[in-house]
Each structure stands twice: as structure tokens, then as C-alpha cells.
Length: 217
Image 1 (tube, rainbow, N blue to C red):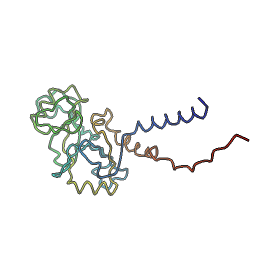
Image 2 (image 1 turned 120 degrees about the vertical axis):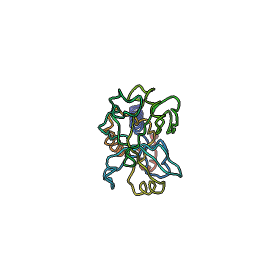
Image 3 (image 1 turned 90 degrees about the horizontal axis):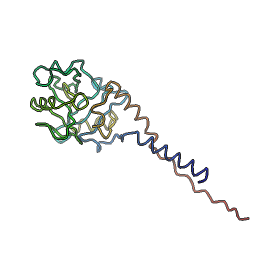
């Protein structure tokens, strides 16, 4: 293999590696769906959503519901005394959003749906009923398969689409990968930094064909 061929293959391999590290992102309203992640821009117009990462758990004509993934509430689950299974849990509840802050929801990773669960994507479910929460708590092994949220984020579809059109949100695929992130407080920064990696995806301008050199004299 020539030296030039080795360089070309090495560059191609490097580009593949970098692209593979970046989850798909967009600002197209057609990419909105349950299971997608919303990451607010650096200069969020609404302070309620500053530096927020929101997983969409429901997206249909009757409305859009999401849960913030990166705002620990500073309250351990053991404080939710009305829920069986929460008493011995020291992991924190999270602020799910500014709407109905007293409402309790949970994200659950499970091989099958808990009672009254909403299927979000892959093996990820959302539960919002007492029965569903208690069943999930009893089956849970810890914060890697269950997280509890106080409140939620809500929109009607035209409202959220308008915000995306104005550039307020980045949309990421594979929201389930981040639902149980081990460092949620830094999640927004890590994801917003990845948006700057879009340059990696920008194709190089096409070059004009070069006339081959003839070595036959």
C-alpha cells in the first residue's frame, strides 16, 4: 500500500470515529417525537428552561410532555413516604419541569411495561400512577433503572414547533441513552458542547477534477 493510500485510509477512519461519537442532532420540527431529547440553546430565552435537557415522553395531537433529566431536586426518594418502596431509597428525586410540581412521575428501564406505563422508546417507560410507581420502585435495583421526577414540561404541538423553528432547542436522537446518565448535573454542558461538533458533519466542498499527468514522454 502506498504512503498516500495509508494517509487517506487513516483520515477516513478518524472521521468515522468522530462522527460515531456524536448523536444525531437537528433543528427540524419533523424530528420531534417521543424518545427524542431537547437541549436548550446557550442563551435560553426562557429562564425556566435555562441549561435544561428534556426527554419527550409523549408527543401527539393532544399535547407534548417531557421530563427534565438534569435537575436534581435535593430531596431523597425516602421523603416520598406515600409510595411503598421509596422508604429506603437515598437517591434523589428530580425536578421534571415547572408544570404541576406536585405530580410524581418516573422513568423506568424494564424488559416489560410496568402497570399503566407509557412506552417512550426501546425498553424505557414512563409511569405516572401510584400503582405503576410502586411496582416500579419494588422492582428497581437503583438509580440506573428508575428515576423519579416532580412536575413535568408541557406544550401544545404548535407551541413547541414554534420554539424549535426560532432556534430555542436542539433535538437529539436516542434519548434513552441519557435517561440514567451518571452525572446529570453536567449533562447539558456535555450535550451543548457536542452541538459545536456539527462542523465534523459538514461535507468538504467538491474539488474540481484534476487533469491526470501523463508520464509517457
